[in-house]
Amino acid sequence: MRLWWLIGSLVVALGVGVLTLQVPRPAPATAPATEFSSDRAMIDIRAIAQRPHPVGSAEHARVQAYLMQRMGALGLQTSTQTGPLSPGAIRRLERAGGDPAAANFSATNLIGVLPGRDPALPAVALMAHYDTTVTSPGAADDSTGVAAALETARAIRARGPADRTLVVLLTDGEELDLDGARVFWGGHPLRDRIGAVVNLEARGGGGRAMMFETGRGNAETIALFGQAARRADGGVTSNSLAIFVYKVMPNGTDFTVPAGRGVQGLNFAFIGRPEQYHAADSTPATLDQGSVQHLGSQALESADALLRAPALPRETTNAVYADVFGRVIVQYPPVVGWALWGVAAVLLCIAAALARKRAGLTFAEVGRGMVDGLWFLSAGLVVTHVVRALGGPMADRVDSDAAYYVLLARLPWLEAGVALAVLAVILAVLGGRARPDRRVSAGALTVLTLATIPLAGVNVMILIAGAVAVGLSLVPHLAARSVWGGWTGLIALVLVCAAAAQTAAPEIAFLFLWPALLATVAAVAVAALNPGLTRPIGLAPVAVTAAVGGAWLVGMAHPVFLGIGMDLPGVLALLGLLGLMLVRPFAPETAGRRPLLMVALAVLLLGAGLSGYAAITEPMIAAATA
Image (cartoon, rainbow, N blue to C red; front, top):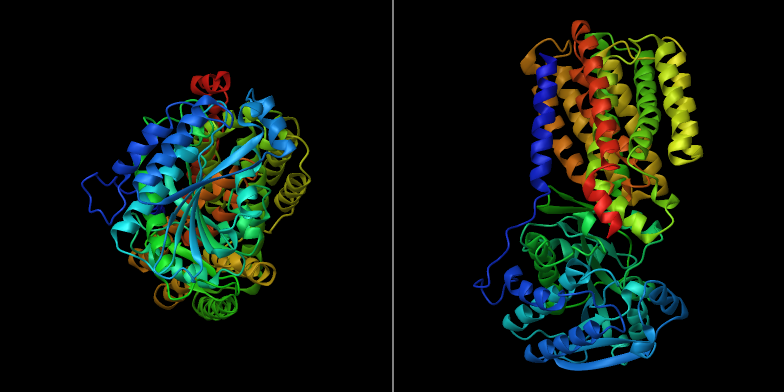
């Protein structure tokens, strides 16, 4: 019966999670003038993204003239600003086959101003870049951002005058070295008047648009964004984990420049359909119009809220926040995380005390449950690394942009393969990781660990994780012998991780705290009502929390993998630990464990096959040729 609860919970979690990842329907051209319409934006996208238009090309000049005409037709006060390309940008353009001399070695920004009723108030900038790479028409990157900015400006004007001035800034040279943004923020007369920025980007050709970057000290910005995003079509996808991760990555967009100057703002992008990133087939025909709607609707509501706010957000402290199923943002100060940790710890103690009294739980069993979690993490890191490497080299080992784009095209297959690998390790724990001969388990993990070296190069973290997994497999009597020991031990381990995150980087601690709170609530309910885990209906609290928490983790896992999973596939193992914590009580009775282990092996082989298939599929070869 527990197995059926497990299957049902996983199916519901996956189904609901996938639903939360869907984009809204495109709004027709007949939508109210005060609303964002992707159909209206597509008119501009089709006009802009006919062919690649890198700096210095004839197509670049055509697009430039078109955009100036469009901003004038919208009633904006238009101007241009020209500044020099950096030496690095010139070299990059020449290597790609472009002609910087045709642009007089300069970038040209296009500026449109919609005056507000009070010129003394700080203005709001709506920013996107209109240049592309040499090889791509750039329907997504960044013709979508440009068209969304124009449609947003039109809708804001239709809503009536705002107190603040809107500056539509279409930058040049972003694909080279952020040169247009550096020129504008380096000294344009409007620069010091701007108090907030909304930047629009894309890396791919579809998926939900995520708000992934803000200015420093973003608590007030997130509060405003959370209110505005409720009015956006399709809700919102954003969390402080994404903000934290992007901050420590070497990437940059045009928003990097004003953010470095201390300007507050919001940076949006969609990153689905990664095979279209900088690709020749990034055309209006292949673009997901629902993604255009989601990006533009959030841009409109955010920019409008900033324009009509009594005061713009100030730099204060960083907020801890996350969306819940894309519908609402939950936000709180970092210190509240410690209070949530305390609540979860108290609930765990209550559940453990009840389980000790009614089900014979011992402290040693809790410790073995924590060891199970450590084994899962270490083995999961190794297994996901191997499965990911079967699909091609890690991004830091490719030697050209073309090879990197091929890897992006393989991401959907790699994501499926790595996700199945994580599921396989979860099933291995539920089936009893100590059930096979420990020498066989240790030997298999040794082979997998060593296999990472020829497949992906030497990775010290993976080698250490492999050594830990092998060691924990060899030492006898370290696996949890009871469901309660395994469950409470996992919760305790997650709370240790939460405390470490809360201390070092409180913006990411919610990732551990929220699932732990769900698990502890379920544990108290089950310990009070069904401590023997014998009554099927008594497992209902676990099923509910597993379905709800699992769906939320699916919604988190997809954008996380698209963002960093190419190089750090083990991030899904970390999320898998949280999922394992939620379903641990569904470990089957003794008779069902061997079949579950066989299923785990089959799932792992399927995941490895999908990842390996990504390396040989014809679309990837075609992408590489293009």
